[in-house]
Each structure stands twice: as C-alpha cells, then as structure tokens.
Length: 427
Image (tube, rainbow, N blue to C red; front, side, top):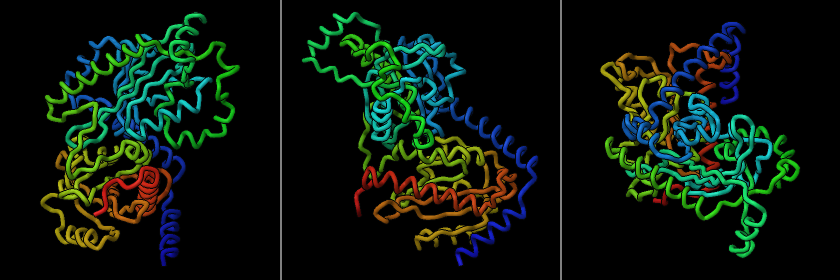
C-alpha cells in the first residue's frame, strides 16, 4: 500500500512537472527570496539578542575576532572586527554571511579541521595554532581561540566567538629555547582556521580531494609551524574575556542574557548547536517541537519557516505552534492534530494559519514524531507547505518534499544521539 502511494505521488509529480524555463525562473525566484531572508537573519542575529548598539560596542574592542551564528543555515559569520578585517584584507561585506572556510588554503590540515569540528560539536572552548590565508593568498600563522556563548535562559549556544592573535615569525634559536622551557614538547597542530565551521556535507563531498592534502604540510609550506608565546596566549584570553563581557552586558538590555559558561536550567534540555547546524542544511519550512517540555514549545525553526510566516527566530523559539492559528482556524483540525500527538503517530492536515502581518495562508501541514537512537520520541517535526506557493522548480509534490524533510530530520537526530548518547534522562 505504501509503495502504491509513493508511486502515485511520483506520477502526479511527473504529470505536473513545469517546463525547463518555468523551473529555472521558479528556482531563481526562490533563491533570491532565500538570499533576502538570509541577509535579514544575519542583520538581526546580534541586534535581536544584544540590542542595536552591540555592533558599535564590539567595534571598539581592539582585537581580531569573528562571531558566528550556528542557528542560521550554514553557520555564517555575523560580525567581523576591524582588527580582523585589517589583518585578513577582506572587507566586512565580503565576510558577513560567509562560512569560515573562506579562509582555507592549500596547506589545510585534516587534524586541525577535526579538532575544531569536535569542539563545535561538543560546544566547548578550543585554543590552537593555525595556518590561515589572507585575501591576497598570503599564509599567516595565528593563535585561534574558539569560545561558545550560551543563553542563560535555555543553555543553548547563541553564538561562537573566534579570537585570532597573529603569531610572528621567530628565529630558530628563540623557537628552540621556547620549546626547551616546555620540556621539548611543542604539541603543535597544523591547519587553517577557515575550515573550523566546515559542514559534514562538505567534508563528505570533498573527501577525495582531501586525500591529496599533505597532512604534515611538508612540501606545501617552507616554514615550520609556529607555537604561540605566553604573551600571545594572554592576549587571546584577554580579548575573549572583553568580548564576552560586552556581549553579557548588552544582552541584559534585552533580557536575553548570555554567558561564557553553560548554566544548568532545571527542566530544560539544551538543543545542540551541532544538531542546529545539521538541520540548517534542510532547505524547507519546518519546526521541531519538544513534547517533554511544558506546552510543547518550538525548539528549532528553519529559515524557510521564518520566511513563510514573517516571524524572527527569537519570536518563535519557546512558543507553542498555536500562535499561527487565528479566528478562522478549524478547531476540528486542531483536535485531529492533538489526537495524533496523543497517539504518537504522524498526520497530514490542511490548516488555515496566519502570518505575523495578519495575512492568512492554507498550510498543508505534515506532523511526525522523531525518535532518537534508543527508539524514544525526542521531538515532533512539523513541515509546512503554503498551498498557493510556486513550484520548487524540481517538479516534486508537497507530499514528496514533506517526506524528504521528515527523513532528513530523523537521520540528523538519530545520528547525533548515537554519537552523544541520550539528550535527556530516561523517565
């Protein structure tokens, strides 16, 4: 029966396939809409949590650093300091919205990539010597210090701060004496910092190319790797403390307080930034809700959902999906949804919802439970599809797109739960 249903859906999709010209136009329009939405998310990433003055305050800090947002698809850079721009040769417009891998070069080392990826996945601080590349292609060594910024109210990572301190070239004798003071163990690692935020998808797609990278950098860089001095480590620590202090101060103005350390909040399970990054690769409108929390709040909302409804991420997270309902929403359909949740099974309904501006749209909603590796329900995924929306340019029916989203979400949740273990204690 399921096979017949899938085949029938596929036949409907084929019969309704648009012409190549229409598909290209639809894809271009969708791409432009997403780009506009992405720019808005980047602009609001700091201002929505820290107030409108945060950019000016951060600009006064005399240090080289970047701030990234794992909650936006692609984990983009949302702030670049004046010091970093001067050091790298890039303009702010060339950096904002880009992933950190733009600073990668030919001597990128896989071990450093894995170190940074693990630090991001585990949401912990990391300090490492890295080989970066400026805009003109010139390599330069830096002390790279990565630090997560946690929201106090929910324990989730709001941003990552990446401080970068240049490591100047030293004479061989001074380098040898420095190693002697540390017992001869340099503990040096190689790498390029732009790859710290490289997605699992990119790593998988370019694995064959990565095999041609010399893991020890021999033959790629004439000079040896550089170890940071105690003075440079102190500068990185001081800069990090200054940035965190500024973010904490301005977050109090909005009531969305942040800290450099995760606070334990009773009854709330932090939503992994690694899972957020994985979900950000799914380019459809959907939200995840947590049935283990009071009122089953939204814990993740895709960029496409924000574009569809007109709400910002901060206006959505922590709220029940009921805020999309309005005066003409069918209560019978809402009852059907509640019954599906109680029965722990999927459902598909046609529901009248409302955007932030008050306009209504017919939402072809598919809801499904998402189980972790142990088989217990971790979340519910709600996939939205505007009935009057244009085709995605691929000829896929809403049903096929929704099934694809559900499958991708389940893979992401199960994969991370296998790696990290249970996200919450068993009841």
